[in-house]
Image (cartoon, rainbow, N blue to C red):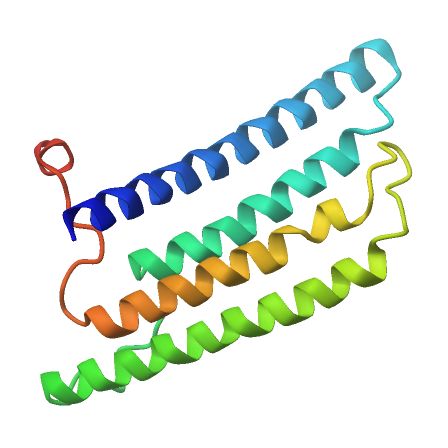
Length: 167
């Protein structure tokens, strides 16, 4: 069980680093585009496509991370007066519904990729499916993370290591 937790923690860290990389690439591309356009009066033809793709990928990875860390917005006004067991049950149902949304992301993400597989992005000439491949991937992560959180209840999904608790 420890090996599974360790592997899960490693995959989660890899996801976080990939999201950070997407954000850094997006900021760098936009910054370079602004500098090149305003100083040299010309721009890159591919900057909008790359920055849009990075923003979309960052957002969808953020959705999956948010499900696992339970950081999505929720209204607690309705459950504040309920007994703890009822709130735990409602939370489980909530995360099962989120997992179902992950299934929809997979199904419709694959359909969108099939529709766009023959089209190309105009500047980079990459298949349009590159932009949408993150839909089924993040859908699978939302599904997995939703199920994990739904059945873990009050336990922390990712136990903090000693390094994290000292910080």
